[in-house]
Image (tube, rainbow, N blue to C red; front, side, top):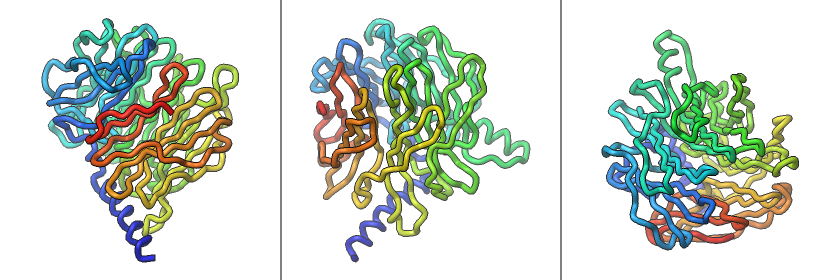
Length: 400
């Protein structure tokens, strides 16, 4: 009993430290394990990270065993957010263009700009970077997420505090931050003026993005509901001047005055005419003082009725299970997450062959000593890969 209690208090301490930090996961990094990855149509693996204030991109033709010489993107050194939930992002367009976004930290606390750059020559060079948003105030524009759909439409989302500042100036209450987005219909030559997707988002959790079969972009984020309940919201990115229609996606009713730095995972369910909705995975802290009810959850979300299936618990919370990733091919679903055990970081896997209705038993997929990043799932042709950046073993790529 004493051992179990100690483990629970250790877990609670870790969560409390994150909540007190509130927005501390965007500290500028000299270098970091926090990278983003993408396969292109030829099977090359592209990687974006940070080195000495520069966003750098390199490529691997052997699934991460070796990489080309890094190419710098930003002309001048910046304070680039590259830790935990905040990191540069990379995506490959259907025509082969490379697209990269990142957050530059500014002088004011927790402020930032979202930058974008593209390469139209297979990563040999990148064009001059541009700000995604037209608002130039030195405020929070951070936690960028990047999506490129099958038609080449580019969508960038981020956490933004302009509405909080305006509300304070007017003496009005305002919870959290807001989700904003900007869209490029011309392969990144320019972006439309940014639009607001929703008010009252959590301040420092990543925004998960996926696509419906028709290319519609769908976002999921941690939201501040009435009473400081930190559950999740979902919304389609509007097209043709439609109004946003956010829907509540989770109902844990976790009450906490702080940000857990623990974003959700999201994947589309079904392909083509067989599309039915979304797979979701997320962290919930529970509402007990000992942290014993904190857990990871998985559920299916109906894409038409916006009703979720009963949430399924997964992960060993005594080993600080967290930061899940989801990927699908047809009815096959892969769900991975990170745990810590005996000084080692581990990645665990559950697989479903019936679109998330039932699951195989969890199994240990990989482990490493030292520090490790969050696990990533990427599809290459008809093969799914776990990609995992570690301090001791480097970038690990496992076919699963």
